[in-house]
Image 1: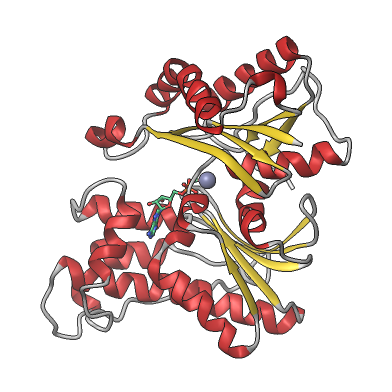
Image 2: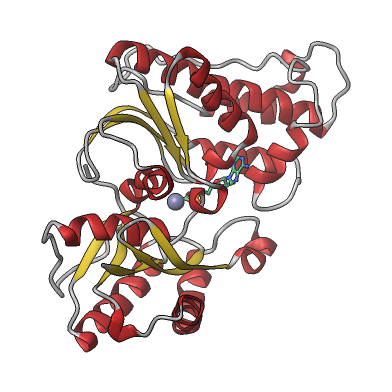
Length: 332
Ligand code: KG4
Ligand code: ZN
């Protein structure tokens, strides 16, 4: 089955053609980053307008790259939640129009589950596994029971990890988008320059909940309190921030693995492209865990993961009607 995937939940306008959730014929990602750069963040109104202008050309590029015509596709999968409402609506309505015009089945896709599914395209992991979702909008540690069924074991109670990266970058004028810049500066710094606190939550809702706002405040407003006397450089600040941010996630991942007895781990979302997160997760192999990470192109927002997950639903006969609506929030 060849599934056409559409992803417009934020600032990437992406369309992919993926066969049987395994073979990626094309995965076109038109990033709006340069157009949001002057504002140091995604402007929702600009994002949705650009999706309207670009989506048709992105579709044509995806079909051309795959050398597949629209009549050859077996179904359409589109991110319908969570995300920026205006952006989601563009993808959802475009998908509905295609489904109606081509008389093909349609399925609405949850962006969180799509990120968690992304490593499956390249690795074929058996369920269940510990799924670590680290993105600009969400932070989840979960027990992934099937492509559709997930149990949240931990979440952020305030900022998402990517948001913390982006805010640190914004405060120190490092550029936009911040995560990847902080990551590259961190690799040149001394991670022990600042002893930032990795906060604990007294009464967490989930056992492995995490909070990034204390760390973010310490990095942005309280540098002097945590200095070990090393030079105050962006490299040293980023390296110290990254050590603590990734350490907070890894501590919970290790504990969750031990407590649940799960033997497999996987990660998805933009921050799973981070060099220290990847190295730390891969290090779990030394303790006998099976670790599968998506390649970098499948970590950040892309339509291949949407088409891949869409195949799973459509293969099982699960479809959405043309009443499918976009919603900004995540639901389990
Ligand atoms: O999954 P994604 O593309 O979009 C959302 O669903 O949010 O994730 C975007 C986030 C941004 O916060 C970006 O700064 C972060 O992923 N990011 C990184 C890296 N690459 C992207 N954060 C840390 N290190 C990276 N290498
Ligand atoms: Zn995402």
